[in-house]
Image 1 (cartoon, rainbow, N blue to C red):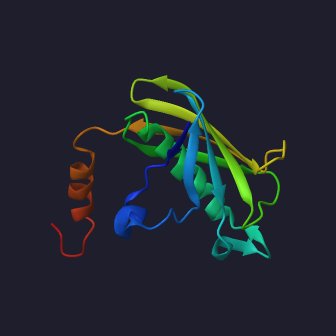
Image 2: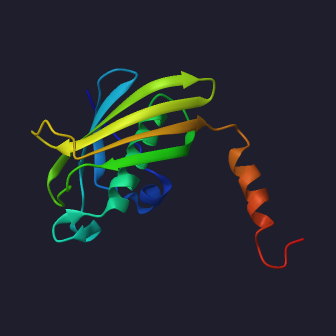
Length: 152
């Protein structure tokens, strides 16, 4: 069943399409999903090749948003990306997500990225997401207010 991927705050503002090129996914099960993504040409890091920052960013974005479809509000704790082959821009890609394990609020996830129709992974990722507590953003605002010049 195809679903629209819930957009992050940056893309919800103004109802623009996902800046990472990740707009729809199929939920295979409660623990697995497949997103169709395309690296926009303005995210190239070399001639017609996706920038590694885009690759890491799209993994972070899609894996985290996959959890939100199960009503899990989370934040990224760690993310490790392996860059295996060049990822072309402006070509359809498949990003697979999988929940590897869950221990309390800690959720370990993995992902693979490949060209549509190919069997070789071009990049893989593994990371940990932590389910947010209700006061998550209030705590962060308090912490960051101490980072401002002139703060006590």
